[in-house]
Amino acid sequence: MGLIKSAPDVRPGDDRRRRSRDVQGLVAALGQEDPEVRRRAVLDLTGDPSAIPALLVRYQVEADTAVAESLRTALVASDDLVVARFFSAQLGLDDAALRNSAVLALQLMPKATEELVGELLADPDPRVRTAAVGLATGGTPAAALDRWVSVVAQDQDQNVVAAAVEAAVGSGTECGALIAEAVRRFPGNPYFDFLAATFACAP
Amino acid sequence: MTSSPVLSAPVGEDAGRPEAPPLTLDQFVRVSEWVYRRTGIRFGPNKRYFVDKRVQACVRQHGGNFEAWFTSVRAGACTVSSQRLINELTVNETYFLREDRQFDALVDSVLPRIRTDRRNTGDPASIRILSLPCATGEEPYSIGIELLERWPDIAEVDVEIVGADIDTRVLEQARRGEYGERSLQRVPPAVRSRWFERTGPELFRIKPELRDAIEFSLANICESDAMRSFRDFDVVFCRNLLIYFDELSTRRAIENLFGVLRPGGYLFLGLSESMSRASSILEPVRLAEGIVYRRPRIGSAS
Image (cartoon, rainbow over all chains, first blue to last red; front, side, top):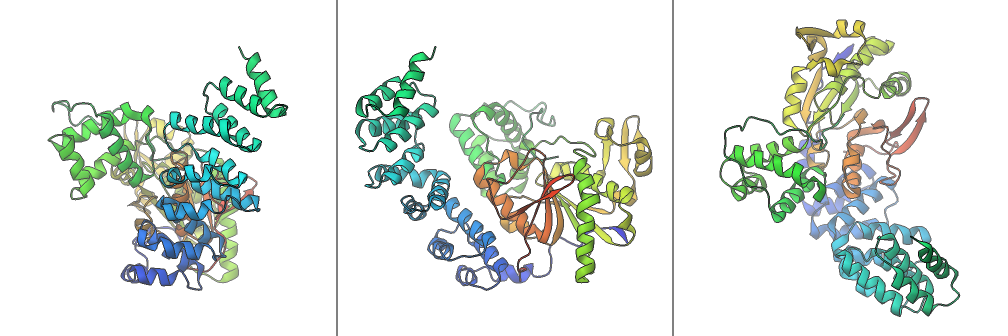
């Protein structure tokens, strides 16, 4: 007893696992009863674009936390437009936790999300537009500012406009004109009045 | 206790070779992206000088120009080139018994729990401990010393300690087990005399009985495929590494660590690290000595 030298790295079962690493077999493994088998199948399928539809299907029914987390990581790591559309469809749900979770996923998919932002900013649901304002940072800082300026000038919902102003202020951009425009469009809004007063006092 | 990007001078074995030109922005971006994909470490524009100097050293060593060198790195035909780049960008700095409260937690809280579990289940398996990244070996040797010095049950159970790192250069140093005074500053004289032998004026080497009991192995925490070789560990020390990763790399690394652990196994992160935002697959466990994370007990892999 005491300290002993470890056995060789490769443990029993690894060879068998390597042999079975065909995509079809791995997709089938997503439905296995043992969650660890499912989780390892997800890891094996990560990075394979052809597996994305199967991963998406499994993600929607997976009950095991660890497997669901692996599925989510595999999906967001793909930075794929289909996956981004899947998460963006959750931005308008009543469940705030799901909405926030979708935002976090989309933030990790900069390329695919960037492709969707214009569409999301035009969504009829103000909750989707509010989320989209925060996701409009995938391009250059100037492009993001252009989007926020456009939202402040045109969006009919004051919460969406407030999100755009907040995003712009948070980016460190000079926002005096943006705030003035928000005050002009929504007179009496206490948040915009507060921002205007704060910026007016700033040295 | 980490193979992490730390500023230090590039190795000097290329002295005399002609200077390679500085990287263009495009070259810097390509190298950074390759390193990110391989290691999970993101080098932003503020690290351009750091990357530049080390890439220049690699290009000089390889011969030819940047494109010839980078082709050999990307193609994977020359693993020496890619490994050398990783070695250059992951310089290590650590010492024995660093953040020692975590060793207290291991000996006083975690190992007794594992022993109790083993007794309850009748599982005769040895206790397996992984130090990842192990850098130049101070952490796995510290774990060995702490167990041999302070854990009474060590006489009754087998314990395997494995040190793993992405950097082949530090693994060689770890296997050699030779350290300067600075590394040993926190090791009490009595412990030093029991587990080290003097090999030079300010040089000490781990005694063979401890040195030969610890396995060192190459590992990349971001490569799920390669990490499969590491399984069924009861305890993993992964300290001060995740702080260098972005969120996606952190999630991948945590999933690989999850796979390394046995169900019910424990993970030690650095004192400044937390996984509360990154992932919820490991559950926090509050011990008297601090917080560790545990893999929940679920089904085992086939």
